[in-house]
Length: 440
Image (cartoon, rainbow, N blue to C red; front, side, top):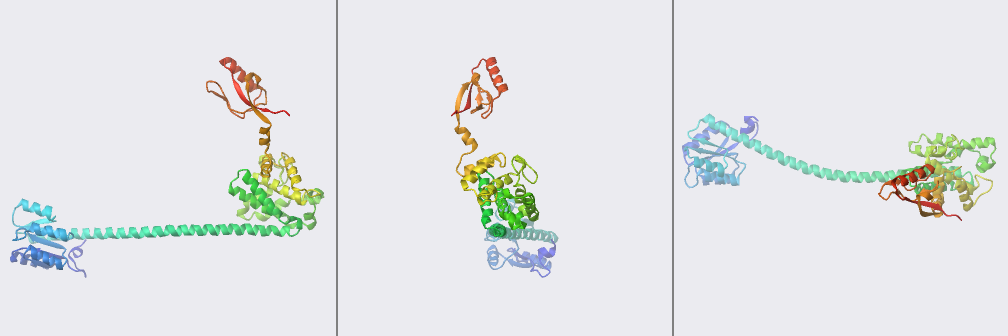
């Protein structure tokens, strides 16, 4: 910070000083000294006159004599501090009165005190230091106000940004939902082109997709997986787009060797057509494998059981169920009950038993596990009555609280022998809760 910044100059107004003393000679000397340094100087010959002058003009610094009639320097500077706290205050005294100086420091909160007689250079340095101190304080206050204003503006901007981000997020979600709906609509329109070639195929893809999605839900799959299976259901016969009309209208059971070869290749054609679309990769994998059989006798790769993607195993059941009713598989159309029974009969061979269970439950029936439990009764038996093949219905725990076997464990000869041996060695009587099949 330069003298020009502190004292004024370079186009800036000069710093203003008020000198208060009851001696005219002192005031004249101070005025002459500071004006020569480029400062604006006003004088007053009493504390009351100085206060009156400050009511009409702003001052950067005041210099007050200590001993003045009516109002001394301490009282005057205390008034200045109360009403103009940003004005720097200096005390001029010719007396070594420590009490007076302490009063000025405590009540008037002066920056410095100057002893009479003074050295012109020393007093100027004190004044310059006081003005520098004031300039730094004023700059600090200005920056604090600026930071506070900027913080308030930033808060407003942040609040506004949060609103805009929320609004934009909602717009993107809505746009994404529209795109997803349009995507599904486009797929439905595309699949309807194949169905238009044969009246029996009308609505086939939509029914298969809907059943496949409900099966996925019944089996506890998440929404993303269920959606992939639904899309696969809509598109599972896209590979038939190049089929001759005769191939579309002939049941699979009546295909000759050439037709059967073409038919078994349609999932691969669908894969080739759809693979460029990244959004359909999951659905494509399902379509590619939905002609596989659970027992490994399907196409194209003869996969079996868990090697076949679960979505493909679900799609196989949904597609077969609707195709049987349309007469696309056998020589005659089956009604819903007959198609249902055909699916159940294919469990473990053509179809995944777990998917068939979900299919049966979805149609109001009972799963294999439910039927099995209904044919069993829970019994508590002694260890000597345990038989191989029995299943524990509850955890097997010793009288002392030791867990031996968990519920659901199927007993065999080796396990039963260990139970009996443990019973003998520990001299305990062990009981077990088991499922016992009810004989008709």
